[in-house]
Length: 327
Image: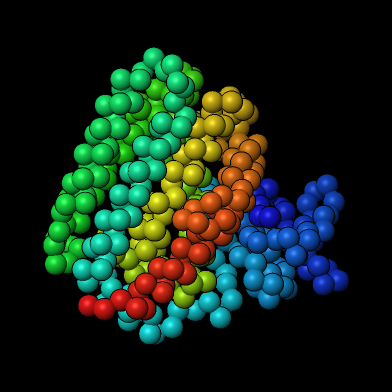
């Protein structure tokens, strides 16, 4: 369960050993045993007692911006990264093992994109030839990624980014054809979005950033020591690496929401510069849809867990891989 506080004036407090949400219509008791994450946006407040109670019960507290992306978090001190693994992360990022890891991750992302396109396209789709052409192109980029090699990641990072970006461009061009016409977009847009589909996508990715960063921290990894995105100063670059394999989950949820046409003009606003921003109703629909999807149990590599737990398991596996890695 995720508690989202995004209404101005809402306060989360502690009362008689319980978490209480106070708002203009009264107050509500929040069951601690079912709560995993507290997400707080501008205008909402949390008391120090409530924060300490959440930390004591290993409940994540995220402070998010208007796009749903975490800008800060509170977590237990026992999740802190130890020096051993931090040193190992730095060694790993400069090793051949890092190259194999990032190539495998990008290949997995492309496989996921192909699988999604095939799964959501109707059997008798009028753009079947476009789908087949896109699939071939994505497989070509996957082969390029598979065959490139170097001694350190920085030697091939520009090529990897280029192929990853090109494959995503073809992928989203095909996704666009699968959407109802009123939700189609001219191009992939970020910071800010220039259409409602990208607005939903960006906010969904923001939610996912928080999940991935939390999993890395719990696994003892330093989110600021990345592999392919290592040049981005003072940003959680390892999150940018790891999230790629999960973006497909947000893509799927947003596509389904749009295909069902549940997002209307009450769900978003358009600013004077043409940018799109989700409003309260739109955020509630998307957050609930994403959380429901992440809590579904699914089989991945022989392990039956919720998708959210798979993120945590993979973070732990990455930490173990890094600790065992040899240069």
